[in-house]
Image (cartoon, rainbow, N blue to C red; front, side, top):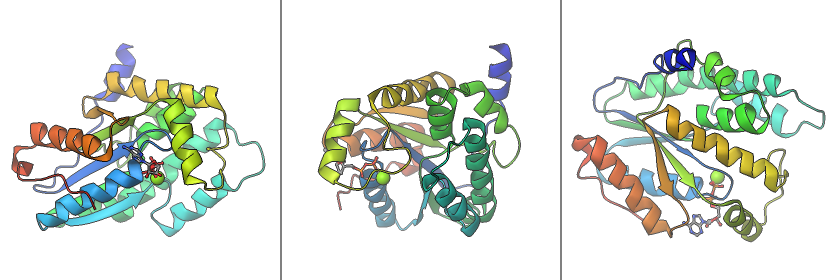
Length: 232
Ligand SMILES: Nc1ncnc2c1ncn2[C@@H]1O[C@H](COP(=O)(O)OP(=O)(O)O)[C@@H](O)[C@H]1O
Ligand SMILES: [Mg+2]
């Protein structure tokens, strides 16, 4: 435990004045895509440059890795998966996230990050959260967002919303209820490890979810106090 705490101390948010890095996490159907678009509009109204980045992928290298995982028909070891995601993430930080944040008034919004690897490979696939954290001890993988919004819904709500969406199920989405319960417990574990990992009740309607997210931003970052909820 002392060892884990020492590892957690190595994580840092970027320090480019006036630029911010925010992440949305949560199981399928929790509203990440919906809310990331609302947040983009809110920041654009204040004349910020806003970039939406998706994980894994976001670079040519990362997109190839993404396809390798999502379209695989063979059994992939969770450690292979964890390294693959970490590899794509390091490239994304190096090639996109850090160079963009260096430019003034930039907001990087990311759909999934390190916390997904903790939940999926760490808890649901059994590697253990500490192993995943150990893989992220070195720059640039030790960069964490200013805030991560954990959009929490029940497994029942996830299935209901996925049914309405009617998209083909991919590698991760085709798993059953037990897998989703493990994922949720993995995300819950992140609440105890990262003070910038914020619980959001995502069972509420869109406006209710946006309001909670904006509240968390206002509380932590007074220079963003004029940011208002926008529903596109
Ligand atoms: N707060 C909400 N209340 C009701 N339905 C929602 C809410 N947020 C998203 N949805 C719906 O649930 C589905 C999944 O949302 P989406 O934003 O794609 O989630 P994710 O990207 O996390 O999988 C969509 O059909 C969306 O319209
Ligand atoms: Mg989505």
